[in-house]
Image (cartoon, rainbow, N blue to C red):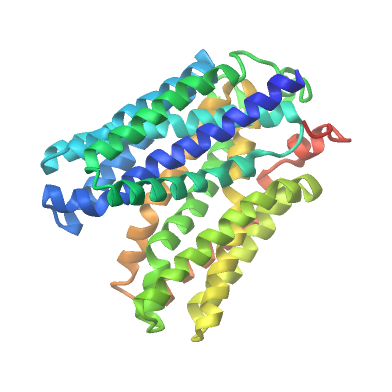
Length: 402
């Protein structure tokens, strides 16, 4: 069992990297595709809504399918389809074909996202200790791989469609080759006794998710709205509010992203020591302090410190919410994770737009007060994470590292 569980964990890392790489491959080609198709930034923004809509629909479909068919089937199929659909945006010649391509690619990527997270919940359950944040950290590695691959393709004068097709083909092979290591359908982890927990859990009912699942989903929406706002507005904050040159302003997002990656690499150990509830509460509190510091202080060093604290504080929040949703009832982990991830993804997409709308009423740094409020609300709602079902507290002493 130890060898198969170790292999399942490694395969889960592979799929998280794969998901990040395939999405990153689209992101790094956005400027070139936008120019080739001949659309404005505003039109591109509208088309990106279709990408999000496709991802949301994919999450809603893949979650229940993962519960019914098992992650070994759905994760593998989603990964292969995501790789195959990557070439579609590269082949698009007009806004209509690009719209269809993004809808399909978003659907496949959302399916992979939620199914691999559902499988990660079962791996974490089997380990009997927190491992979810580590999976999320490796997603960022995929973005780095995509950027390096795109740079290499550009230097070799490889066309966009050819480069995206090549990366997608490699993704298909990786998805198929890694499937055998995933946990089989209806696999029962050894350390968590999930069947007994599901029967005893007051949060699960025959009519579907309870208020707890939707509360987790609302918290995910708030946290991921903050992440989305940071992605699009951190660099503009330094440039427009503090007057930093573009070369310096770009480091605002880099600081945020680096702090988030480091935080996720460390979060599992912190959860094991203090519990997921503490990570969500104090992480959101740290994020609230960080964004307030960035928004209100006029000094450049304070802004960088604030964005770093914002990323560090948010880093462990989403993995704990996804984990809690999956552990509420392991037999419906896929459906529950899809609800939390789906609503959270809505927040990720809405974040930039909400802040942009507020800038019509107030200054950009004043608009960030909304993010402070959302983080503070998340900290106050952290009690929804029941430490009785926390992977860090279920089986003490924790099993030895595999």
